[in-house]
Image (cartoon, rainbow, N blue to C red; front, side, top):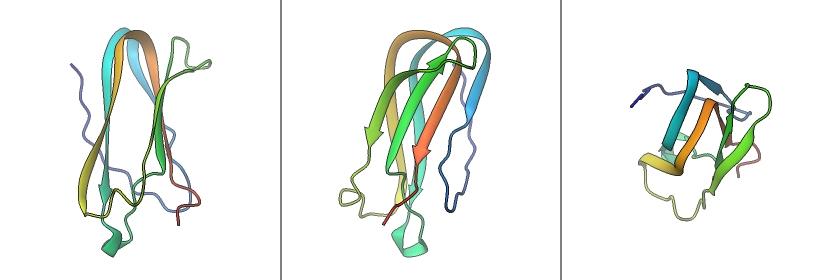
Amino acid sequence: MRTWNAWVGLSGHDLDPVIDLGEPTIVNRVYTHYVNSKRSWIHPPKSTEILVSDDGISFRPEGIRKIDPEEKMNSGKERVLFSLAGVKARYIKVIATYRDWE
């Protein structure tokens, strides 16, 4: 199992990195995390989407999670889990949509 621990701060745009696993790999789940601290003006994404690809060019969607701002009133670290059930892919694209967050 591969895990990465890195935090990215954004202002005014979305996040859309592509992760190269180096070779086709069976992926069972993808976790994303975000910090939610409204008092510090740190907001969660409006939605997070996972896409996979064999060639890094053509991506197919595997899941999307919308985040209800009314549900996320507390501060802290939140986790979003995507269960992919054995999808084979070399590339994973994560799209976290922040724009137009009010």
